[in-house]
Amino acid sequence: MSSLLSNRLTKRILRPAAALVDRRIGRSTGPLRSDLDTLRREITELRGQSYAFSLLFDKTGRNGSRVPTPGQIDTLVRQIVAVTGEDATAARRNVTVAFRQVIALETLALGRLAGSTSNVCGKLATVPLLGPPNRDVLEIGTLYGLFSASLARMLHRAGTEPRLTIVDPLAGSQLQPGTKQAADPTGTPVRMDVVRANLALGGRPGAEARVQQGFSGDPEVRAAVSDRAYGVIVVDGDHSEAGVLADLEWAEEIVAPGGIVVLDDYGDAHWQGVQSATEKHLAGGGSRLEMLGQVSTSAFLRARA
Ligand SMILES: C[S@@+](CC[C@H](N)C(=O)[O-])C[C@H]1O[C@@H](n2cnc3c(N)ncnc32)[C@H](O)[C@@H]1O
Image 1 (tube, protein in one colour):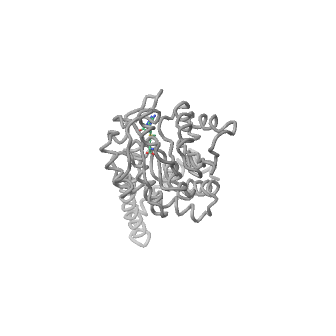
Image 2: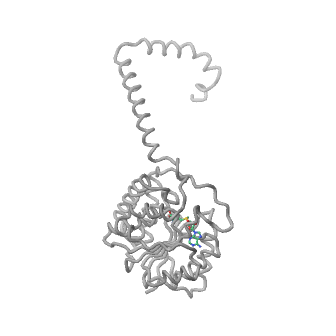
């Protein structure tokens, strides 16, 4: 039947009848006419609303859109339950709160959060549910400082006011050895003043964050921030295999017993060095770190107590 209706000959034969129906509807003054007018008005209104919605959520000025599908959120919830052992209600609450924070903070921010909506919400929702053993957080590679500000808020709402340390060269733009980075979609420079403006969105932990400018492999950088055992270390700096291996070896030394190490972009086809370095580091079983699992494109490791 449907092939009969889509047949070109059938269409040509039916065209005069269809035109007649269209003319009748056009001239109609009864209930059909008023239903049509209502529908037209509603569609125009919806189009206007969806345009405003897209200004807030579309990919302009960032790497991708911030409109997750129900399926993506359900997947995050399942993965978080598997990695943290928490129930689905707690996982869904954290993902939802994380999503609201991402939209709110990115709207006010200079620059952007790096990563897809699933990647960012996955990290923000999972870390507090893993119950870090203390309030010290180290982020290696911060770009615009917005992830530290967001994580600070997620930890604070869960009852821990964190103490933040950040390491990044803040070289004007994102540096990635061996790759040529395109101009950032935000058009915002990667600089200390920008990072400070974004950290202010993280409340007192953000305002008081210690920001160490330089590379995580620099001996003076390491000396300056290796003064404590961190409850959370986010590895998101040099994404090459050698860079991630070096950061993991350092993380082994400065993570607190029971502390969490997050490897961003694990399993991301663009950054294969992250996964290969992690697998190399964990192979042989001599590491203090054990793999808890993966949420979106982040791996979560815990230091043995
Ligand atoms: C992917 S971005 C970080 C994104 C940020 N964590 C976020 O979630 O929004 C990587 C950052 O690490 C910096 N970086 C590159 N090599 C580094 C290194 N060896 N030590 C510290 N930061 C490094 C880059 O310049 C860039 O600012």
